[in-house]
Image (cartoon, rainbow, N blue to C red; front, side, top):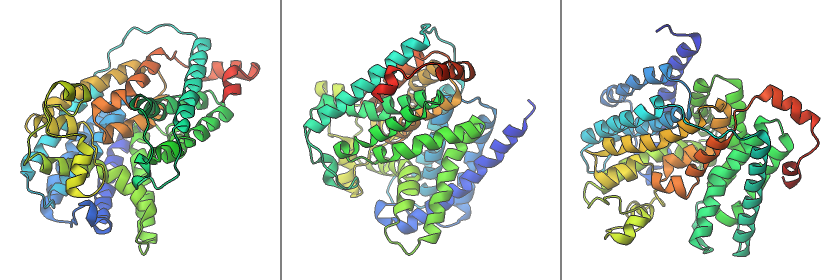
Length: 432
């Protein structure tokens, strides 16, 4: 296979990401020891042990871009951070076994995510129909917001108890998660890709209206992260943009850490390098320790199964938070459907099944432009890295996002932009 210039750039950029990711983990260890980010140094064992992760670079150089490519690189980031931290972890679990189990799980998840992309039948919807669907989504989102507000609002700290200050019915909580995680990113991608800038901006502002309802960091992230992805994937090759979507925030956070090192709050560094990069790796470390000494869940954390089987735990996030004292520690399917449900030895098998489920998104979106896929899944990919897969598919709207991708007709930007410029403002614009 002959490598192109873009392939070589990606092959060089990923090792750069590894180096800066390591630097970020070391800095987090000095800034956040209470979060069990272990203080690490440049030991030969850790460097050589983590260098094994370079075997995954050829897959990202050779692979074509897809939704699975995005998820796979996110998983690579989480597992790389865990492998590094495991050399310094003070927790009592078999670190060597855990490292190889996570590397194997990453491999089995990547196989369907990166290479299972067979075509599927799709309905031939018109552009008019998809505009009507967008209007329906926008109207439904407004109805969900009105229902949320009717139960009360609370402007508080997203890291504090304000998130749970107001009780709402469970179905409404599910709908709110679906709107934030899938509907609003899809609508922003829909309008922005058609150069309907006013409608796209209104979607972002509308998303901020959910903050007094959920007091969630994701809502604050949405109006920054989605335009950043839209710019990034329009400027660079989509595979390179995937790596840069991690690399640029890491550089920004490390710069803030160096310049504002005297600031003990580390606001920027905490928001980017801890929450965005380190938390998925820390979750693997804590779940490996927690379930090395306790019964496995056998998937009883899934609400339906919990009702028909006995379960030694309630919600896993609060259960771990009560032990480790660092917040509600939900985690990706590597930790929940993997370590917690079946143990380290069988986590690669569980990861393979989860990868197959998520590869449906690649099949449903294979006809769509890379930028549309990346932007509309901007929150969904983050959700996958921080929430159990069974939860993220239903409660955070990823299954709905797959359906919307499947329904969305292939978009030809040049021709459609010409039509849009000749057409008066439609009902979707008025609603936005």
